[in-house]
Length: 481
Image (cartoon, rainbow, N blue to C red; front, side, top):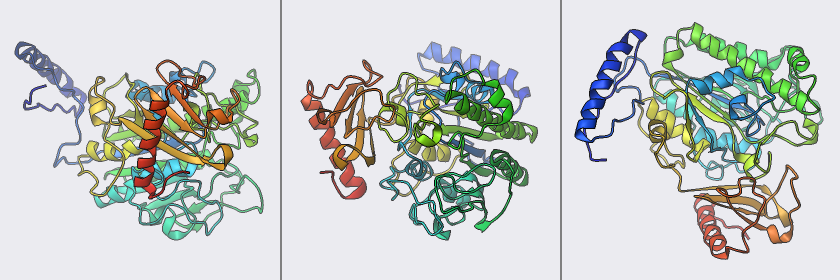
């Protein structure tokens, strides 16, 4: 499109709508007459605006690729997430930067590949465990420098020493657990002994014995919003559900009583999660902040098939893989964004996008300068503006965990091609052999990743593996054997 001056339209109140609608009609007719495409109405906060937008970043835990009604789940009740999608943009090809908890969170908060963020595997869950290096720059630090109040409520799992806990990584306020997961009533670490309590407010241990942790997260998040309603705030809300233990409320357990196990237990926790998200969003509306607040939602990676979750319960739809796997079901996740009057409503985007993109997207939408240090994410604003925009990533890389023969599991996506090195299928949809150590698929023809094309296209395997080696040298200074 030729370069033209752009007219920016920003809806402030409902009373503006008739006048703006008329102006849009005039501009559209002018553009038709001049053979000029009408720019999208998506617009960042104007420079010098009286108030920057608030940002709420909701990050669920172990929620499967299609485990929201609007993503195709026919047996789940998720009206609040469906409503969020209806009021904003929903992504159908959105990826976590890792198939496991801590690296995915490091990537989200820094806008960097987990390897560049210094946390390529899970952080420890014991006090004194180190995690993401303190020198990493988080979105909380960038927004705090811009005058935002910053809050963390929920799961952390990025370090368990003061400098790597939330208050050391840019958050003015923090409430939640520092390790990988807790029992939602006792707030003790869930996996194994020795028994240890894990509930903290601003670095000090607190006790709320018997209180349901999802309700505590709603309480603390809404209190934070109320406290800072008169200034811009950033709330990072990494809720620890529907991660095991699967402790949905009694009402939702009864609602799903006819589903087979373990789907019934998991579904009850998904709807419990959706209900709490609805409570938070209702508080935003009641506080009169809906139009002033960017709401972003994403799952951290695919659903779990671990023993602790009864071997499954979640669903990846047509995709192979689950948590810990670099098949699509481990890394393709539900994601959406809402900002009334700025982000289109009732729209879907099919472009490849990733969790590292939220940081630069938030900065641009808030009218702030781009990050001055090296990040790997790209702003999604052009994609939000235009459903025909190209993906910000011609190629994307993952490396996580251990695969066949003790070699690291890795993957690279380029257009329709996806190459997985040392794949691991935690959904157990078929055997993998030594011949599958390089697993190549054409996702446009095989979304279920059932057919390995590596032998038919050795030149593609060689090219993508060389590209991945170059990437690995860039982010770590090393290369795989």
